[in-house]
Length: 480
Image (cartoon, rainbow, N blue to C red; front, side, top):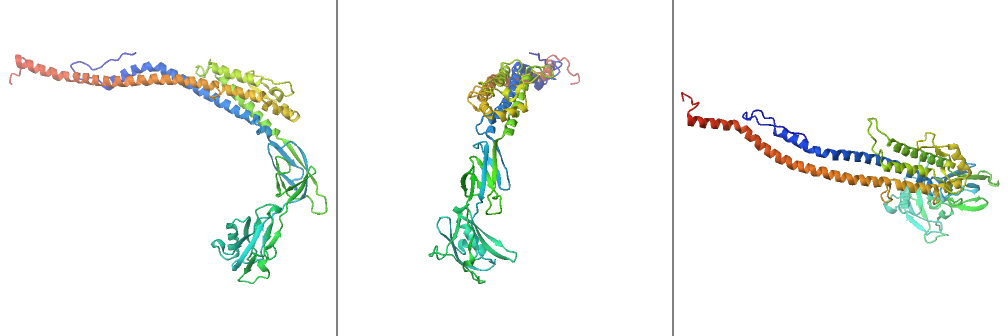
């Protein structure tokens, strides 16, 4: 601990000394005790940063692997194509779809049932009511002016929509300014057939619409069904399939496609056969494997960088620590393991091998991976997704090395140990600072008192001199 000196000149000068500066020097000396603790704390915090960074890289590697090991992940992705996109457009193929080729013959398209009135002037007053039903449902009646709407064609449209009766009502305006009420069923196919009530099919409440401004030539404003609801029919691999919608989801498991036409304008002609091909999305798998390789190499390089010294010649934070060696060994062992005797029993069979730099990184032969996916797709899936194979084994390794505290990850345990030491060091520093604060207060009080005494000495000397002169007459002013 360094010495602290007091600079106050001659003791009788009354100059005193700088209490604040003196106390500051003493506090600085007392704080030297904390330096080893703070140095150790800084080193531990640098280790924490390096460990957390490695943990982030292992988490990225875990996410990459999960995309390949998840039963509904990248391995399950499918692609599809249609031999005639003017007839059939393939919308999607889910994980449930099975790779293969299907033959589809579109016999007729689905239609949505619609109805409409005659054209009337948009401002004409409309009276009466409309009664209709959807499919085999109940009859529904809407009176003109329902829901406080105007008694016009637009008012009737609004009343129907406000009543939520299974149709969408709208007003179609013609070039001459006249308008028609249009009804479109919200239910696809035959199940959504609109039936307009009349005196025959619903005599108790038939439709009764009239234009009270301009007489209409047809009863009920000519409200009639324009288009019947029809189901789409097709043959899929020779089996008849019916769909209420042209957006077909029930024909090929896991596959959704849209029917656009029958492929012929001649109703008597046989519709053409359309080939629908469902295949495994090997392109996405190749990208996922490439990302795994890239992130694996990033983790290995990060570990390698901790094995030396920085640009200033100081050891890296994890230099010589067991956890860095543990992570490195764990990754190298996991990536080089083999499983079983099948053709695809390790990542080497996928074109993944150690790089020529011999630094623990790996390389990917994209052509070999493509060949494996095209020739042994099921075995590639098994390598990543079977219990006890590469995917599950590597995932276990990542759990044992990473930041998962519950799994006892090496990084998690190292961070926990560091934080325990950091807590002890911070407690030591806090206690020392508390002690210094107490001593600082005491020293300030004592040195202020001493300073006051020093500053008062000249005055005390003068008083003594005056008393001496008074007693002895020495130095007395002769004219006094």
